[in-house]
Image 1 (cartoon, rainbow, N blue to C red):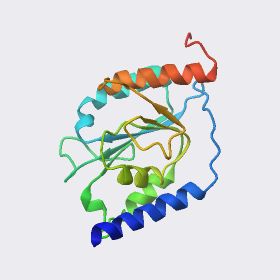
Image 2 (cartoon, helix red, strand yellow):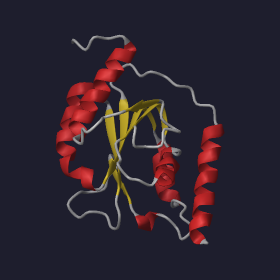
Image 3 (cartoon, rainbow, N blue to C red):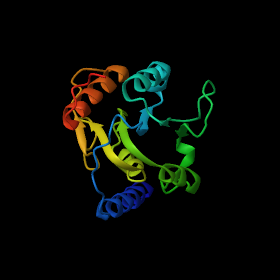
Length: 181
């Protein structure tokens, strides 16, 4: 019973977010975009390489990492305003995200949001993505594309660094730039 109530409440938030008119804007990659990335707990191991890759490719003003964790917040990484962890404890018994985490997800307006999560729970990912305000939302083919402005098929590519290089190449093509600086 609680599972169906959880699905109902999450779908209601998703439906409300879809009803809002959001204007798609292609970010100018030369003007230091603000970026957010949604990752899984397993993917945070390569976050230093990913961070340096993003800084080299996009030269962002700010990067925010949102990490989905199964149980507890990992002890080896500090939670900050640039890295937030969402665990099962952040949801109440009805499956609704706590107010603090919801406000954090809503607080900043990003130029680019990238969903790199390989989590299979499409309703959970859509629920979390519905809180994020972004000019351009990018996902991959294994995600539900309901909120994505751009969906990219990475084929067998598992490395997030390589995935970001592919995303950068696509964004350069869509913006009409050739990638030379």
